[in-house]
Length: 488
Image (cartoon, rainbow, N blue to C red; front, side):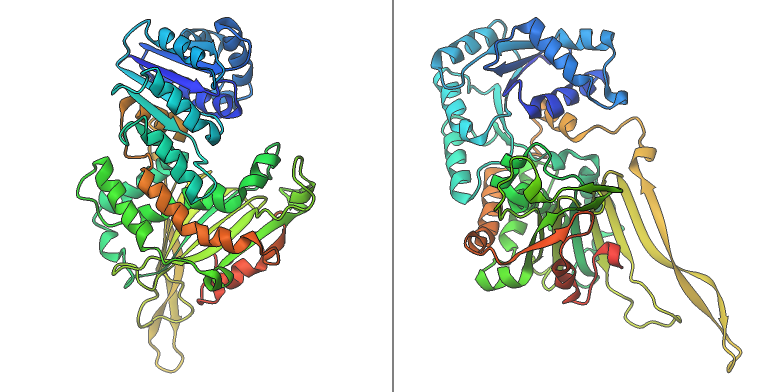
């Protein structure tokens, strides 16, 4: 397959930190078609040779195992090119059209690794010069707007030029191998499906925790916050995959139809339930991994009076027959105790305990990062406790776990999230991309929270860096008689 892959924002952070390293890994793994061209587009005054050198310098910052050797980079760079463009100038798009027209590629992918406010301009210009024919796809990087109205405006601008099948809204969390395994776990095995409902499950917890702060992205993060950055997209996508009904097939739209049904079934928030069921916080100075780190307000490019949240925990419900009454707890935060992403399915306790001692209910832990695997927590007999009165013996139970490490089980077959998403974009596989109605429904659901916070600064709770967030987040779960996984 021949392809042309165009990165708008070709010298931006996303391109050199995520996209180009992922493409190199695809090349190294033999999965990137050799008959392809990769074109970086930006305003910097570069040519092919200088762009390749610029890229090589930055790839040296990758982990040593992912760093190209000089010979590897030389071969990979034969596919890499550069075109200087001003994204607002029509004549520059004519030059892009001419460059692409040097040959007829089977597929052309336009990856918009730019600020979202440029999406409408780029799409209109691509349409004006005829670069929206049926062999062209456009990939839209998040954040797709900052609220429902801005997301709808971007979608209108994109749909005026590209069909829904051509517009790929990327959520890189969906490319993680462990997230892809959610579908296999649920719909490729018979073991869990009979239990995957309110009669057997007490609650589901989704945690996306980061130990890092905002780094050099303080200005961007302060305009975004944890709710927009992580909950509206990543966490809600994980929730839909956990709660969705079995699709009729593995077809992309069959899957996305079921995910949309979940989003439409989420109990809506109002001013009262936002106060009751949502906790937001902002980190203060503390110890993370043995080092003192600054608070959010001391980070570079963050206003000293900022009220942007760096932590969100919320309780939600899916109002349908399968899940009615089962709380879903979503949590994300910066500068937390550890970096990890996981989903914990807590099953109900046995209806009548017959063994002595406390008996922790079964739970399934789906580890997304940094580990990638499954843990199934069960109870097993560890010995006999004799009864002095009856002389009979009763087995005492102890928790044990079955641990599956996917990286060990499939040591040569795992690919990174962006590597998978880029290869899917080139191949036209849409399963892992978000449809516009999904995206807009997610914004519709979080908007009452944003509105309630707009003029309410009192509910922003401080928490110490290196902890699991404000104490109110623990109280949120404890109100239902549960604990977060690390507190159990």
